Length: 220
Length: 220
DNA sequence: ACAGATTACGTCAGTCACTGACAAAAAGCA
DNA sequence: TGCTTTTTGTCAGTGACTGACGTAATCTGT
Image (cartoon, rainbow over all chains, first blue to last red; front, top):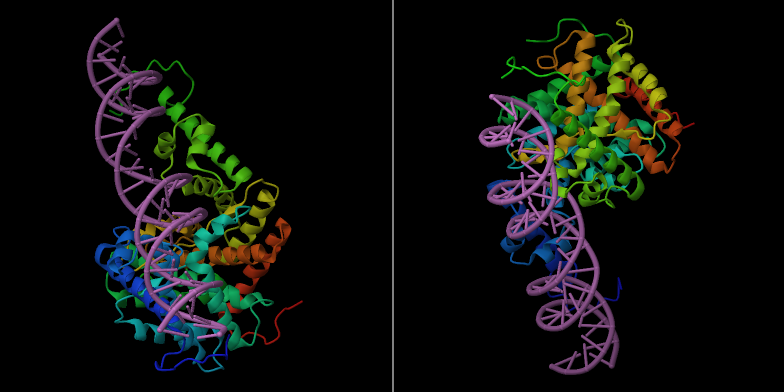
């Protein structure tokens, strides 16, 4: 079914009308969802409203997105791509963690004035209750795996056999999340503060894991 | 209303009968929940079943636990106490990260044959949608904060002003989670394998963040 | 362009987590 | 023993999510 296309080829688009409609529908639901989340908050938006806003039924919404959270996730993944690209373009001789820090820095410049920076984070697992994996996995597993993959590319290591890319991805994302929490807790809405928190905390990691801390903190 | 107590003081217990009943109710619901989760899985257990199993109505269940997930969380927190205790009893001259690794090792010995080791993990935050914090916070924020607090005690640093305890807690928990994921993914049910994965990955952290990786992994 | 197989959609009904409101029962207190 | 406070059950309702089924749109071959 791949090469037997005898299509009129009037539209320059790639696939059939059905595919294009589906893609547009998904896009439409995503836009509607993000807009409504922005306007009324996440909890303040129902899936019915998203569907109605996109002109379809709630049931159709759930045919495109497995859950309300997935709308957010989709956006997160889109944003992360910039980080991966930045990481890939770092010079090859940079040590992995340094490259990540620098990539994050570039990435931030890119995102700084985006309307949406969404950060997912690490997942949790409950021994013996695999169903709970799904519940949390949404928030980080895919992110962590993808990042580990990109780190693996850079370093020539295979994330499936070498745990180091996975560990670095986990550490990196957890520090980002930690900074994010601190930022949220501080009440600041200034994204520059968030960027600074991220930078500071990433810079602290080697010291924090590699030795004894100097008694008086950098409590400026 | 604090010192005006002219209680008969007939019962040797600490508080009034009401308090004790409440504590027993909570315990009872927790036991029922964990047992049912174990028997039928998390998804396979409804809150009504938990309530019925404890002999109360569903509404009462939700008066004791804000959510079904909270039942699990409660158990997680109980388990973590052992880790904190182990960390507190490490010699004061051990560097923080080393102390954590050793504490984890001891902790594991303690838990090894427990019926329940539950691991929560890091939370995610969505910029501008504080409601989502709750959603994930359940899974890690409290854990991370508590651990940061204990680390702060040990090192004489204040987690509120010095970001280092928070960073270390985040890194540590994320590596545990990462190991947990790898273990789940490997299909092993042997807790010794999990302990080994955790040990290996923790040992890798300094190398992973502090320099250039040696090309051929420890792909034993 | 038209019949027949796919596929997408809307509608309906149902489950489950979770919540507010209210009345009855239990526990504390005088 | 009355009176107040707290706890509980019942009821009704919201919102996320799913399965079933009929209808409509798209695709396929002629």
